[in-house]
Image (cartoon, rainbow, N blue to C red; front, side, top):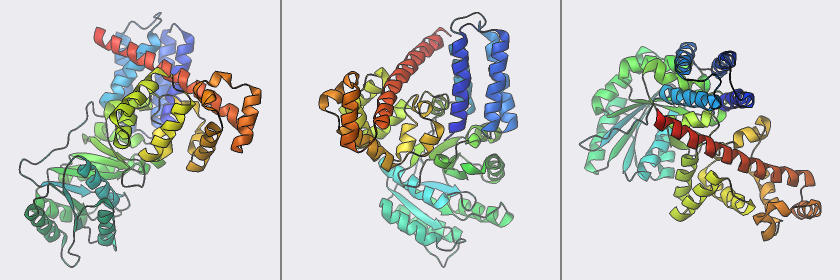
Length: 442
């Protein structure tokens, strides 16, 4: 998810930090590189142009040149403008004053709409709501059956009338939802390969039949800038309240996420980061901006952790991550928790500095089997060695490699990764504290 942009910006700011004091030419070069990075990430050209104009205007207004904190100031400016570009603040869910709240889901065929309906239903359950799914996609063969299977998987009832028409199904589903005194009705609608009048007419009829509080457009992030055109077309006819981007785990560019709100006015509400029904996250603009800049998403990790571990364990994890003082026992514990929190690759990218510390090809190749090897290495250490990696001399490392069925090189790489993670997390923590101080002064 936006990996290429994160790595590119990380390289830009790393070079700035090495310079110490910055000249006007240094700042101009940095701005050019950031602009190229945005365009390479498939950010809409006009959006990138406006973004850079705002960053440049803010940079000119700061006392950058000759300042020892110039690089930190520039990073703060870029972070603030990225947050604003992404929507500023989280857009809260619009609940109907008289239940059930109706959520109309729309999008083109192949965007992952039906699966996202089930993901959203599960998310609603976790908010303490009682949802129902309405199978109004009568265009695609087996769509009704797919929704029924997904509904059973997440434990949510599905209303279906395959021989009826979509507006009637939606209306009857709403009546049934009221009869059962359920809280939310999520309406799955038909898509097309392209936007056409029959599609819009059908969506309009379903909308008129249900009067939805939320109209969410499901967008495939891999379609790039075309996602902006699709959002514009749907918004003109349906007055969208938000967008959900799917398949972000498989798109290293993801520039459409940065473009859609600025270009259409439609806020991003959720992001899909995997095929599992649990793989749907609320979209937080500020957290996404920090992840793009390589700061990770510690709060996101903690929230996921709190779903699978006790509160005191989550607080201990938060302290370890922020201090950078964790050891191999902590790493083993984190791997166990990460397995419960979703795809390991996605969770690892939320750890500050880790995505930059691990080469891109290595990050792309991460799977459970390779993590099994890391666990084997750590489990072959004694408790004393896991708690104090500094004592791992050559003979100990040979013994660990033999005991885990790995090589000394793999053991050395794991030890090096631990030290790199400690160092990076401490640096990120210091930078975030300084940024908060700068923010208060402003």
